[in-house]
Image (tube, rainbow over all chains, first blue to last red; front, side, top):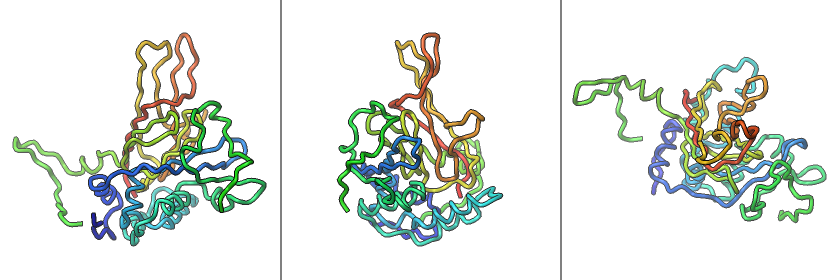
Length: 154
Length: 140
């Protein structure tokens, strides 16, 4: 299905269009990361409707838009967004592969301090894996950590 | 997008009318139904980009279209298990002891699932199957 010309259309309206017209896509990819030594590993799961938008193209704004809005929100005295138009008026990104969509999602939804230097230090702080590679039960879930014996593909 | 209708009021055939601002302001701008057990997964949603499993009963969800400010409202669910001594299960906004939300920004929110204390057990975090949430507020 061809994506309508959406630049200038409110992002929420685009998401409603996608909800009506696109098949949700359940990705098997998961992003495991540690953002604090005091907490267990976290697992990011892509939303199936969002993933459908990413694979379709022409719907989602570029990820830098979210970074700009995050900067605004972190500024002193923030009350409400005044640059929300960036979400709606910036040219949407083209169709992504599933792997590119995961990279986008990491930049959007993982803490910046995790993805900026995930591979520094004695062991990785973030790993992309398939859901089958995760523990099959949630036993001791609050103690899960990324294995130090990972054999990570470059 | 083609097919735009601009109207201030909607009216039924019987003459009852309602301002379109009720519809615009009163609609959920995001909703989600997810399974917090096993390898957690979103069953269906609108306006979410990801769900993060932070530990037992502890989840973050991120929005695709951000809210205008962090003062939006969240409608959450409780479920009661038949024939179980424990209290009802629930999911809600995760708050600190001070009563403030642990994470509630215009683009993400932390949720916590727990079961309530009863005469026979203490409450606590729990991974439960049916987490249903609606988010209402103004979008950016």
